Image (cartoon, rainbow, N blue to C red; front, side):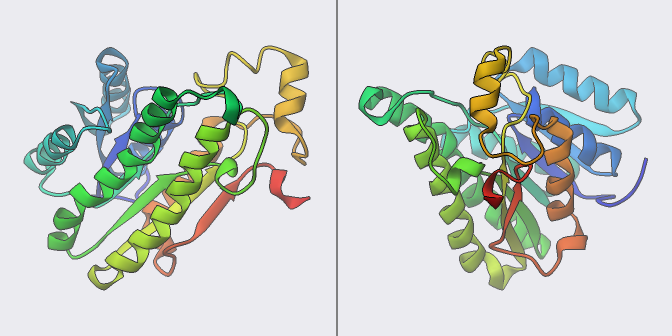
Length: 251
């Protein structure tokens, strides 16, 4: 095991599968004690077991990111187990693939409660713990669609744009307490969320659009950006956007 985040405590949401699982495994392999937070308990426990099998430290906490009480419980569990929280990765999110005119009010409210309200609650809840610890790093997972528009994902894009600006606002508010807040903007990634659309070559081609590296990314390719922002290597970065999109936004 390496030590880029050795001794730090990382709380990762949506950590049972996909990118959240990849973030958790990499952070643990680099020395972090990981709080695996998710609504999917069985899969979350599997992530914990895999971290421990590799020699790392981890616990599972059930967390619905849209609920303030769940956040309080998750942060308290992290503090009880490991003493503090140094890193928060707001990764949990859902996708609704619909145009704006097709999106219902209930769908709009649901995706905002998870994708936008979740990171807000996470930042707010972890703040006093990081403040007491003398600082920390918050990494919010946005999307390339928090920077550009695309067809048939209006509500998703709106939430990811909200995460982008929430990140900047939190960076301003928390700077005095040495808490850095940055966002990561992945392009098309191979995860459980996208596997349904990535089986059709025509859909893959459409989703990749102008991507210069003409393939979907593996989750781990995003995780290394998360690790960098979580570590002290990025000590002079806050309010920044790290784009991991294979060149989608380059042209």
